Image 1 (cartoon, rainbow, N blue to C red):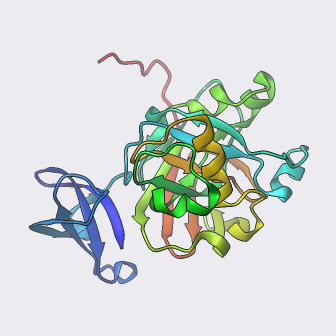
Image 2 (tube, rainbow, N blue to C red):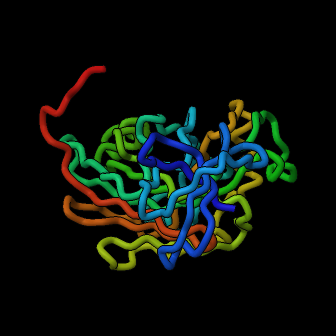
Length: 266
């Protein structure tokens, strides 16, 4: 089942997406309330051509795992960690499919990092690895956008990972994915940059859930990024980055420079 979040002519809704999406024949069927139980439908639906697909969830927090692929750790000049290295990306970094990744003027190297993402389905704390599936609602695709030069300068992750638009998610949550051996591909303007498999992860999905839930309570809708394969690299304004995870789909986002002096207040 594909669970999504859309903007339709009358507002925003959670939906189940059915039909042949790849052939442009998908239908978004509105569900009542939230996407965490058995879907109850309102009776309203829209062809995908008539709506805009948003980030499938607005998490209270995004927890990311660093250096979870040995080849990526090596290309960054790091050893493989014995335990997961985790960091937080703020909820304000989340954008959906086809939304623009904005390059901040303070960075001269912003990299793509295609990843499989876990979506939590119920409150969870101290979950054993073998029970991880019981707290997972499904999986989506993420791009852990990173200001690499700022990461090197700061010697930690927060600023480099936290800019607005630095966490594209989508296009939907796939509830029936088997995460053990799925291909992850990242293309930049159609050129293949990353080509890995989730079977290459140092720490499995279950181990990640166990570790993270031993540190913090996970809430429904929270997202965990599981790490990126080798091949990360910089994006430039005018390019489009696309991350494909087998069994889910493709998440594409254009890239642009953030305008100077574009501040606002609420």
